[in-house]
Image 1 (cartoon, one colour):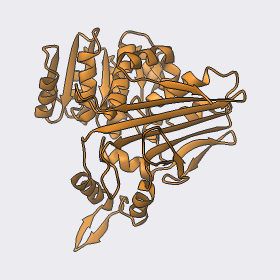
Image 2 (tube, rainbow, N blue to C red; image 1 turned 90 degrees about the vertical axis):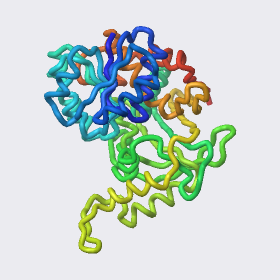
Image 3 (cartoon, rainbow, N blue to C red; image 1 turned 90 degrees about the horizontal axis):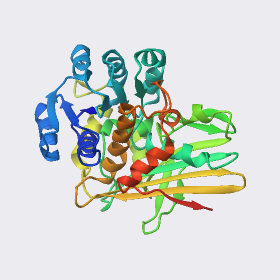
Image 4 (cartoon, rainbow, N blue to C red; image 1 turned 30 degrees about the horizontal axis):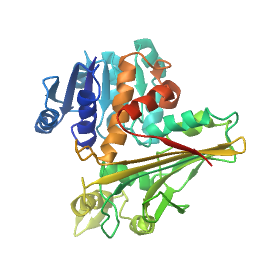
Length: 377
């Protein structure tokens, strides 16, 4: 199979690594970026003749269609706002497509392409990273072990191994994605109905063995399409982001001061958008790419029992793949390969929890030493 990785940042690098080093059926890989030197650097770091670097402007629809042709699957690791046009390009080119997603409204537009994708005989599967992403499939796997499920609670976080004040956080993916998670509303199921709650609210304490005090709070995007999938079937479903204790209060203060606003203001006769300035400052002042952890907890309640799935992943010291790269890019790579091999449950534009066999997916995670531990509580 031939797979295209669009975007040569952290996650593009992780996807390319997985395709070359963990995926013997991927016979050829293309990594493409607007910055050809970045794409070439990823190809060189992977270190094999099976990968080639290409230049692409993701906003140039015609060039994107031409690039997609001849690839069995495409993994988009570029900013989410390209994903609708990229999905349309994949349908026109006859290539399967998945992305790292993160924006509910964009996902809705992608899923509206279902008829076109079916007619083209391809899959369009949004939100295939960590959260949204892997956790949706874990939730489906856990729920299937109950006769009747009443609640699903998902908690996920990427944390630095060496937290530094003031935020005890490091950038492990796009700063735009981070701000979106923190400012947009969260979709949940409450009392059997889909509703929206503000992000950065409902802080709770939680613990993982060997970790200092942690907190979890509402953020946007993590539930993805799960509320629609489980509507009418369960009473409660929610997703919260895990951070070291105290992070939420500090970051929310900056949101309340307007630093994440996209409304233009005038400062010294110059129009600026606070969000753009704040994003630049976060990139300048927050650490990035240090050793990290990823924590995942999925709990299902039903039949008078509670089932907990936990993942604790960390930087791979040998490959230098961070925990966030492993748990975000590797799942997208797995799904791209399942699509390319025709091992999906249906064609069309489909939420991953409806398209991906959970047992196959979890087996592929285990083959990459991403271990799901389970416990009945």
